[in-house]
Length: 486
Image (cartoon, rainbow, N blue to C red; front, top):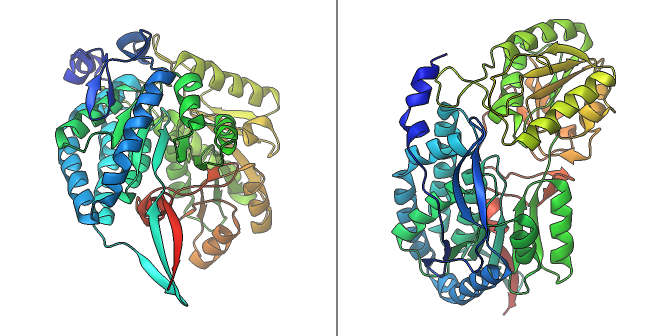
């Protein structure tokens, strides 16, 4: 490990300035209160910057600005909105290196992954909405009715810390492309990358009030957005428990919600699969972003005839998940986002072992760096499908492995979850794999390693959420349907 090079990498050593303002009504402005939020580097456990702790007055100001801007913005021709988003794409692209380095600092994602995923994917999503925004308005007729889509209005976007810019872009770009205006509250753990986005918004010259930024605690700012009478729709990504709370707040005033919540995705490996590829890919997926991924395939289901073979491959693959500084080129697994998250994950590992799981790799006694919120890549075998570690979202580098004896049993285990966000199926017979995929109650399924498609609808069944993001389906979430009879 090249720790010396990591310690002197410009992304590691360049100071990050405190951000003391909010972006409201097209300008940087002082917050109403004097509170601040400390942003920690989870690798060094040091505070690297502060941002304002906004309050309900700041939310009122931001919502008023968004409401005032909605009429003119929604009235623009699609090509005009597309031109603004295109300028935003150019301004954000120029900041790609800063985005990757910032996420590596405030979240701990290894830089090479942050460059490709944390910075690259949001730019891909934004580009897709530049193209969608520029398309003519979609209309069709039913009998004597003209059916049109119109923007819902002011959107409150509340986003998580694990993919901070991507989750922002999936909401903000889709809403703006549809003709809505936005008030954004980013996650407290990773707010710095949102400031880079709004620097780009400022540079791109979006009309005042179209996009607004209010940082602050979820219990204050998030709740105020969800309950605000002038917020027409709330789009939230995060835990199922918080999603339920936001739904209640919005329901009190009959406001629309879109929710992207938790996951406990199953990776089904049938006996005729290319097992080494299926297991190695599955391990990499489960541990991406240190396991802090809602779509992570955290349950590996393997046909019993190849179960021990799969465990051996999984153990070897987990051993290759090198822990270290995100700026070290050899690092595969960075820290967890916070000390609290680390302790939560360690508690799940202890619970799994107490409930009878067999430790195959990692575990509580595995070596980790002396500093930072690290947990070693852990594989637990012989896990009961009804046990805590098989049912609850751990959100850390913990993979559980479960045997099955038939396709029917595999489907039953895969569907034995309150979640339904993602999943995978592997088989040498694609028709067989597709048949299993069709029976899985989940919003997305990858067959034999099918690549993630940022234009495909993204969202879940059951307690994984309501609505869809990305692509045309994501834009449609921000439209109301109107019938005009002629």
